[in-house]
Image (cartoon, rainbow, N blue to C red; front, side, top):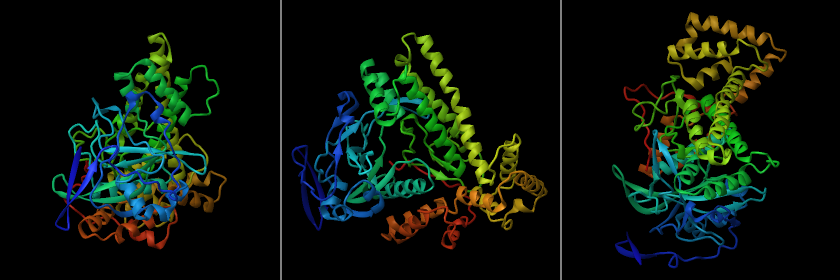
Length: 511
């Protein structure tokens, strides 16, 4: 039996740790409706264990609207019993906590991974019939912790809450954040930091890395079981396809092509596109060193550990294709009994990614410029604008906002001959479509967000929360981020750029 001692009011509070020692109170009114389809896979894919109990949990932020959509009772989950669930001190009725195994290529190098600091409570069956994973992130050591403490600190967990909810509001497929609690513990990283746990909600936590794990350490039967399960969970509309595993590969490629295009269109840089951070569902997952681009520069990198720009903004589409090729490799035994034929099938499908991505990106860029129809010179028009933006260090988001509202001022590029020439070409282009100028502007309003989670604003919110215990800055920020296409006066304040600095903005994994 293991004991955790937490200093609290000059007394030692003893918390017993172990499957049978964590009190399992039944929360009748919380609305939990948990199933465990993933846990019916072969045992190789997970380990059953409870989260580690913590000393003194406190609810910091709770997502009321998400809870309601999940069929959960908001007031019940804000109570002491609900907070105890989010802290891992109490197991909700019907839960079967597990940590999931997976592997992955991290910066191109393959390694064994797994949920080293996360526990999946189960799959919430929502009133609308959806199946959503409920995961505690930062809930203690698991068999996959690789020597880590399994804990998380408050800043990175609030960061994931802010960015994931902003991504959702922007219309980008993403995991979401239900709650953040502090644990009463101190977490040692570079400095001593307050411990915290994030409750993450996802369509699933099946990753490319999950398939890599099955391919490396499982049997063909294990791999087939995972593929069949994934098809049933995420692609149930398959109609007796003659090659369901080729269908699976095709559908995953389609979702990733759309997702990466959406990232590029808002200037989002994930920062750590390892294969374990690409979800089969097509959702954005893992918000460690991510950030949004201010000044347009295709080579932008924020992550402190991405020393060679592997995951730079311009590299995100080709890296996605590389990751998908690794996914295809895992499926080869299922694609065809003849390996040579299987490889050819996989290569033919993987080659579709570039065109699919490009089509999504080009359609999105047309919308950002108010263009409804298609002309062969559109891509040249778009690339010319981006080139001018890059040359004159223009802000990515604000350039498109200025074009949307015809406020061509306060930016260096608008006073250049290159832009004047481009602007005339753009006006000529708009004149050749049947839609009115009003319709075109409305399309641009709907395609160009008034607000993104700018890096200095994120840091401002985290600074106030973590160092001062002031959550009002974050709460106001989340409120204006919740409807990025509203274009309100209040949002205009958040479009201002950070003050000039000689230091490059850096982000960290936050582990």
